[in-house]
Length: 406
Image 1 (cartoon, rainbow, N blue to C red):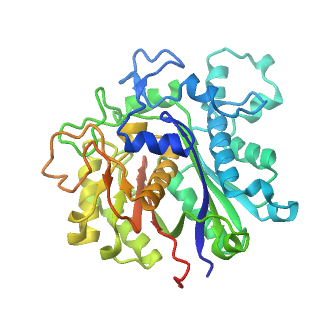
Image 2: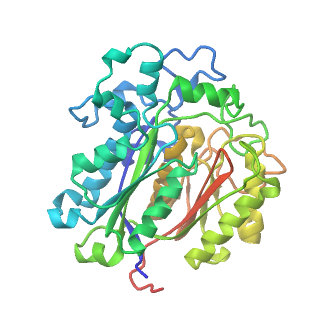
């Protein structure tokens, strides 16, 4: 069975454009969450979000076409990742073996709202605008723009989508469907999305405080993360830089409740056990967990419970952190940018902090790396995602060891 490695990464979040800006913001303990400016947020449960401001986009290599923000974020993250991996140097024949697995929760929500709000009448809609309504527009746009002719797929698996995309991309490579696959997640802030999430009560009216006793909900953000996954032998042949190895993953569903996790973290326990089994990694080998950590009352203790149930005493020996207070909950992009943060932790020997943490909760009793990044050797790590409807996903990432064999 083919081994799968990561040879490129790209990101755009409220901390800035590019992996460097994203990572520096995380380890410096900065938060990009601020008042929404793209539209009037009055009446929302919280007027703040992880919005990508105009000054971030002013420094980004924008395409010539007028596209919705969600597609723009996907394009920019993939542009950085593909450039990082040297994919634009591939021959036409090699590009036939480059695939895309994208994920989104709301697709081109900006275009929907323009039409629904009457900003565009039916007579003003043209074919190009109509095309941007579709969930798979970003996938098709990037494939066409970059000339990648392998298999494409668009997932919408709620907020576990970004991690799910990594797993599906890994399977494509292992099954020989492609040699390289870009796994990506993207979403944008919109009235429609934030209005619905406000009604569901998942948004805090205050600060987002993952794993803190005072937590009262999450805050959403926008952006994209993209990872270039590649068959190890293919990457070595073309002498690509290898950031990490994707050891394994797992997906499941709680089939329990729209927003609450299953009791005692049953669904997440199953997903963590299966991901470790798929990776052939023991609990004792895990050095760090990038948690989903939404800051909601029901989720954080259940995730903590699941980590303890699967890792046993090891859970108390390793750092567990959430980056959502820094960039917001990036919806379908959450798992993508969190996987990038996890790989950076492996490469740099630093784990990002959980911001706004101040009051311990007896039900959340692990080491959450409060407020300040920490030096810590990471060889094997887990990135966890969960989503509305009970979707769970987890991916196991490790330092690349060329001598390891299945």
